[in-house]
Length: 381
Image 1 (cartoon, rainbow, N blue to C red):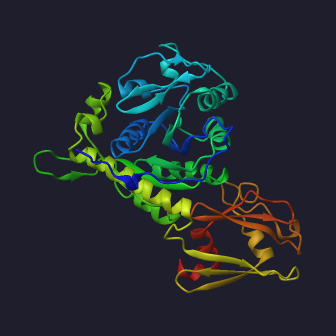
Image 2 (cartoon, helix red, strand yellow):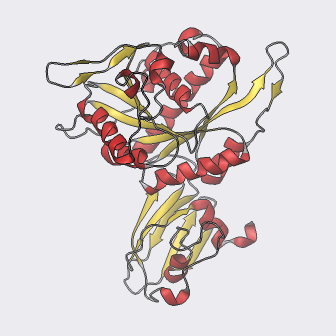
């Protein structure tokens, strides 16, 4: 059985007192680039694991079109209205929960994006979440309106991305990661689901969906791999019955994986909040303060330094405006760029990239550290 772990609670700056989430320390999104990867199961077990480790936790189902949290937590209760007019969340397995599934019965939800985004905003604003250490938000798959609305409205502390081991899944996961980069939400870590099947008799691991996808993405983007979750037929049955594995079998190997993921997530979150995250290959990006300077100096953790002209760095912009996403052919030409172009600001994105706002008003490029290193030192590739 999991025991209370005080280190699981991470401090955070206070939200504005007039915010409906003023008593919520951290809002953590759990997302994926595609459906069918076990994102909701991961979000539910992660939320309950955090609760069992001593945190106050809420679970919000932002998948308006395909809500699954009611089934996963085993509740068909209907929320009630509190005295102040707000909605009281359902309480199940020690956590507070809210989902469209608690409100809409069995009828399919057929709404356009703006309407669905409005419901997500209402879940943040009109649900009486109270005092929480973590509000875990189960996002719908993909990179649409709801994800962007949540990032803007909820002041996300970070995101956890769920993926499966295949190469195709890695490519799709990268798309989801880039979405969080674009909206400036740090990715706390990756969770690889369906990593392998362990034979209950001999303990042999069979990589049914191949292997290595999570490790490859983690290495390329310098994002921690929080855990690898195997296939478990028994857990599927438990989920269908509304009893997550961390509740049904808290002492099992499967449950321990989720508890470990919860601990690693809070460790990484603390590093993000305190600005002490390890593993960033670029220590500093120093733009010379002289307005006439035209060179950026990049210092790497291995002692290497890169000197690059502002003009060349602008030409290297990897965004869709500058590079054709399908062919990889660079669309921006040297004659399109002001010879005197220079950065107005350089901001870190998570622990894996920088975002540059240029004097020509271009600001959509996210330069990953790995991309910069390869571009500036191709001989190392």
